[in-house]
Image 1 (cartoon, rainbow, N blue to C red):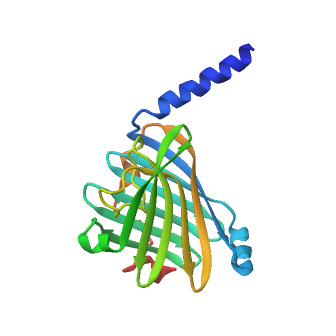
Image 2: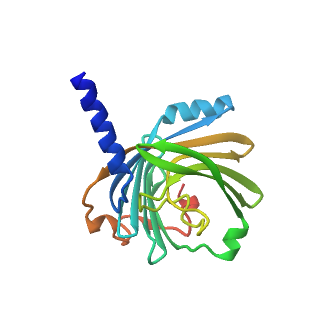
Image 3: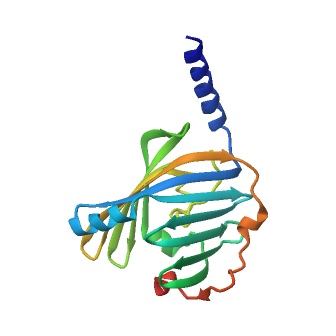
Length: 220
């Protein structure tokens, strides 16, 4: 009985902490890819789970993704300056791209955001559902996103959504069709660590030994 009481108290303590606003720390997520196409699914099985680590502080975010199949990708966002630096290290070599972003009127025409009534609790955070449809050059991408406004980090996937979307994605399903193949990407946060993050993590200086490209599509 005493052991059960301790577990319940720990769980209550975690939920209480989780609902407080978190402005600095580290978030770990896992991503998986799936498809009804057998050949594509075979490739996704080889890739397995893709782990992502996100550092955030002072309206800046750094996300690091590493996979044996796809290599290393680092994405740094400065939301105050509206700047983004992305660099990749994979079999194609070392490349980087710099860009600016904003939720312009032209961008908003291609994005439809509907706030749902459904909620989902992820790692102790109550999340609001958003249904998002993005149209780009005739391709439609559908997103089901559960986000919390209790974590002040920025997501690469939602950075240009504007004021209609609020919060950091804790669970996300992205449905798309690439070259006639339907696929789904699922992302879920698995760990949240409140901790001090060094300013060096958000240095926007391109790393040495990397070649600049206009877009990372050129380097893939």
